[in-house]
Length: 247
Image (cartoon, rainbow, N blue to C red; front, top):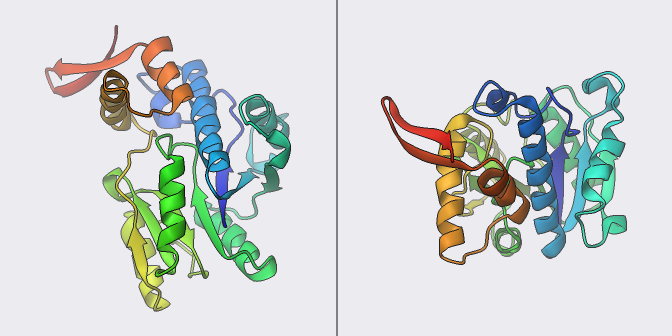
């Protein structure tokens, strides 16, 4: 069983999805979208053969007065089928790579977990099938990566620790492969999947979700409701290329 650590920020206005709050979303809309994606990702992990670990930011790394764990629990308790089965632990480290490295190394070496994966709520299209497929790939590879756009990753799984210092430097998918190669680890890949962090990501994800809806394919339900129904986002040709608009 793979322990899937979801590295979650508390859904607080002005703190999450900063690149989207500069446009096309306002802070309230971006926060609601982040909460929807967080719920979809955690629900996908819960539905898979993996163990859900919600890794939350410590209170000294979030806005004053915010109880990070409580804010995330409040978001997930009504969305998960078995919220009491979810495990919550605080992140340790000053950088994202450091926090991932501390979690992965602790679980593999101290708790003797077989495999550990790191994902973020922005990996909204992560599905149970991909998590279970990664578990199969661990049978022949030490590291399993899910590539995303612009060299990012939506899934990074490890059967043994690598050197995590700077491991998510751009392009993260290549840097992580280099770290695996340095340790003589084999690497396998999941299919490419978009994440939702920037306006360009929305221009990719919104048409994809709409296309899946029209063909009856599986979509992340909360994220799709937020983007397509609540916000009414779509894309069209603009003067400078494809642009987002609201119906």
